[in-house]
Length: 175
Image (cartoon, rainbow, N blue to C red; front, side, top):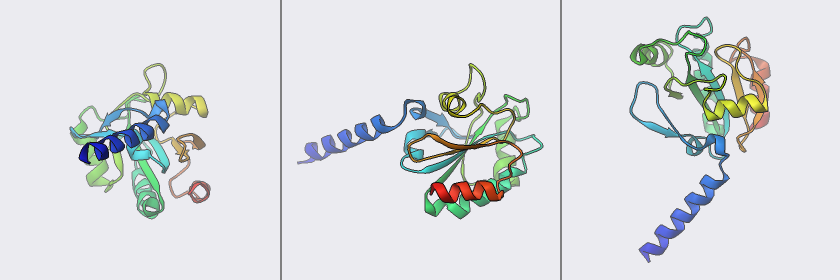
């Protein structure tokens, strides 16, 4: 009986993975950690707010508002994911220092991933897809609201603060 259960679980996992868009398949390392995050599993059947971040940007204080969104909407099915990036030369070269800014200075508990490219030819697969579906980030702290199907519902630029009524309305509608 146990082999049959294992086969059923494996089949279910394969079906779930197959339903995940190709650009979301893969793993990313958490910021200042060896732990890996499977994006398909993290975002599966969830509304997601994807943000490109940098620890030394004029918008870095938005971490506080992103954490507030995470706490407010997590139980309703929103996942907030930060992709640290040095594409705009604003990310600390020392991941430990970048993590300290996120976790200690701003109290971030949502998923933060290690630095990765988010623009141009070197952009990770998710950000390439986000750019195709809307636009690529022009600066740090662009926010992409994704539906449960992994597709962009709406893009918000750096100037849109996490406590913006427009962003909150879009999240409420998506949930």
